[in-house]
Amino acid sequence: MVGRQTFATINLRALQHNFSVMSQCAVASKTIAVIKADAYGHGAKQVAEALASQVEVFAVAFIDEALVLREQGITQPILLLEGVMDSEEIACARQHNFWVMIHTTEHFTWLRNLPEKQRPVFWIKIDTGMHRLGFTLQKTAQALRDNQDLLKPDTVLCSHLACADELQHPLNLKQTGLLRELATRYSLPMSMANSAGITNWPDSHGNWNRLGIALYGSAQPAEANTSLLPVMSLHAPIIALRHIAAGESVGYAQSYTVTRATTIATVAIGYADGYPRHATHGARAWLNNQFVPLVGRVSMDMLTFDVTDLPQVQVGDSVELWGENMSVETVAKNASSISYELLTRLSPRVKRRYIK
Image (cartoon, rainbow, N blue to C red; front, side, top):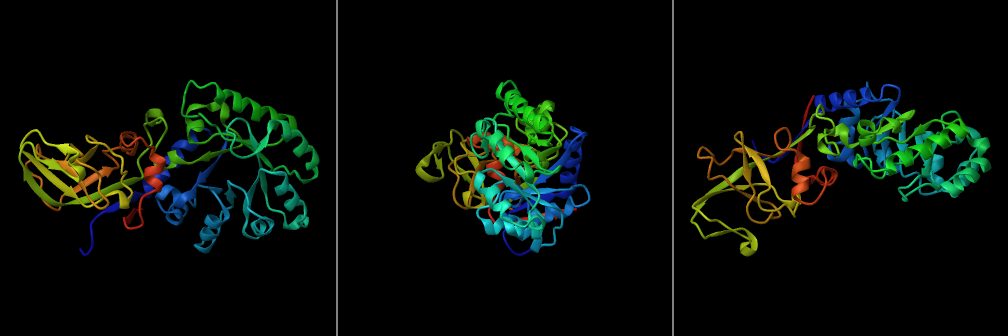
């Protein structure tokens, strides 16, 4: 087989399983599948196609991502989580069946300037505490009052939990209560729950929930839902083995020195592929049914692992960097990062293999 055998396996059956599991956590809600950032690095087209029979609505960050999906034949409505950037985009949204997140008065102006039949389905973003996008609580009443004639039964009031992965954080209940009170007062549907909200905060379940990271088998905190399956497994081959004496160092800047006679496996993957540059000594990978520690600095194209305790190791053996045996959350924690970053930063030079 020609080419470097560094690849990510994307298990689409695990993806479908995760959607079903998470949907069952909130049976009274409809579940949107969030496939922004190329489906968190998993391939938006392939993910959308695999979920086509289960998912009513997809969500992406902005219109560029949505237009690519339309070009690739994806037909479900697509929610634009960041809204639109100008009046031309909001006019384009209805044509392509994109749902628009309204979060400024200017957005309402652009919407109003369109003939009624050219206006897209829209949601309204409310800032209940994230302080990123949306109408402040002080301005929400005026915005809804001034634009009451534009509101439809499918106009959803939406907000975002800032601390949903912190199980004891009081802001979660506060934010949920604020949004639910507004939705009740104006008789509009609501959407609050993200992945962590779906799992950890039943009070946050709304008419629509937005399923992101848990769809791909990762949860924050990681133990929140043990029935999720990792969708991506990242593998790379051993391309060299070398034996070094006690007192010798490994990698750049002599940052790691071995204390015994050591066998080092050099693996064909590095930070240019998306493996975290700041992973520290002792980060682990899975090889031949055993964990092996990372030693030395992460290079652009290569990693080095101590395989002294695995005498049967050979050049060509495949190392699991994360996946079924080595959780991406653990790798991310070791690098002072989060699973979202590792998954979305996987380089295009890593081959994708899809299991249907």
